[in-house]
Image (cartoon, rainbow, N blue to C red):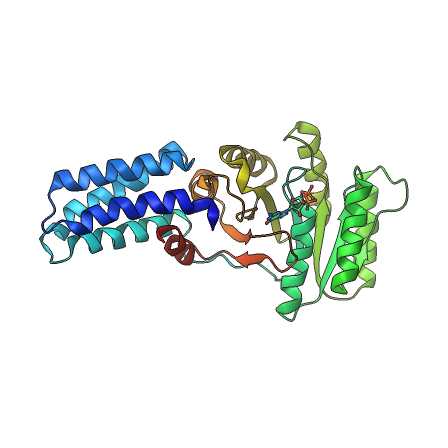
Length: 296
Ligand code: GDP
């Protein structure tokens, strides 16, 4: 992922230096950790997340008799990998697909909500499920059309709001009635976003959520927006309780620190990542594999 290439290069540098030393002293560890701390901050990782990660690695490296082993450098890389995996969330967080099988997609405009709704439908199909798409963005007719087109391409039924509908509660009720007629399936609700998080958006989302009673409320966040994505996620979580995150645009070349900060700052697991514009460019998020990718 190009998003992490600068970070990966710097981590490799720091670890190469450590590995190159026959014997490692406490001050070698401190130097390396200072370098790594800087690299993480430059990658736009949250300040506290960075501090905690570096402290944890340092404490373990100095405390577990690592320095007396034959390959201290390698041991420290492994400790770093473990701690990175931990901050990314540990194991993969699976999607809850129990009844009533409803997924509410929320997020700001442009984050990739509509695209990701279609990607998720495609993913569910591949899992042998029957996805259903519901367009609830009453403010952007283009988003409704976009979902219709994507649904058609995927062979997935799409529910669209009545022409000229402006009442989101009425539109949601109509969508639930449509769903009743469709038989069983996993319903994905693509909701309206805004340019920024505001009270109007949140109170509307609450109404939709209370009607839909979803098992999953997934926030779609643009990784390229960095720390702002983390702040947005925290705000959504405070008011509408997010059950998981989907980080999009990890294929971009912006700094990728948001992905590393998300879990620790918001307490919500990242469940999927978007790695391109195409409908099959969605991946289940595996913290261990991501830690490996970041380490290069
Ligand atoms: P919405 O306003 O949140 O519904 O956003 P859209 O689904 O319309 O997406 C906004 C733009 O981001 C579109 O041009 C998408 O193709 C693009 N996009 C979404 N996800 C990704 C991704 O993972 N990678 C890249 N490169 N582009 C993405």
